[in-house]
Image (cartoon, rainbow, N blue to C red; front, top):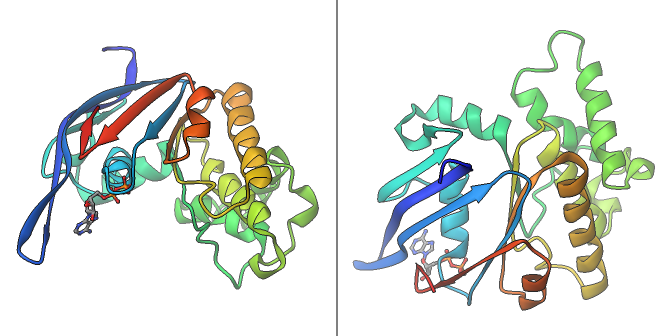
Length: 228
Ligand code: ADP
C-alpha cells in the first residue's frame, strides 16, 4: 500500500458513555491515494465522524496508527502534529465555524496567520493567497462580507477557501452539505470536485447522503464502526 499517502492501520476508538464502553471505530484499515475522492458512507452512529477526526489528527485513536506521508502522526508531540495538520490537511465541517466578527477574507486568512505566515509582510502575501482561494470557490465578490451577510452555501464556500489556504494535500469533509438544500449541495460538490481536478486535492467526504456514492472514485461503507 506504498502509494497511499494517508493510511489508517487497525484503528479503534472506544468512548466511555455513562460507564458503558462504546466502540465508535472498530478495527478500520484503509488507505487514501493522492488526487482521489472517497466517500465514507453509513448510517448515523456508524463511526464516520470519529474516523474522519482520527484520520486528520484531531482525535487520538485508542489503538492503531495513522500514517501521513510516512509519519505515524500520533507518535509526534502534540505541537508537531498540530503543525502537520495545519499544513497538510484541510477540514470542512457541516456548520462552517466562521468567526462572526471577521470578514470572509479575514476568515480565510486565519489558518495561514496561525502558522505565522503573516509576520514578514504584515499579512499582504497571506491576504493575496486568501483572495486567490476565494476566487477558486467563486466568491471574489463577497470578500468584505461578514458571515451574517452570507448565505449557507456562501458560508460553506468561505469555509472551503479557508481549508485550502495552506495548500493541503487532502480535504476531510464532515457532512459538508448537511445543512444545505439539494441545489446548493450540488454546487458545493461541484466546487469540491473542481478543486480535486484543478489542484490535485484528495477528497474524503463523510456523508449519509447516498447521492454522493456515484460521484467519488472510491466508497467506504461503515457500519457499527467496521468497514462493511
Ligand atoms: P457518525 O458520524 O457515523 O454518525 P460518530 O462517529 O459520530 O458516528 O459516532 C459513532 C458512535 O460513537 C456513536 O455511538 C456515538 O454516540 C459515539 N460517540 C461519538 N463521539 C462520542 C463521545 N465524544 N463520547 C461518547 N460517545 C461518542
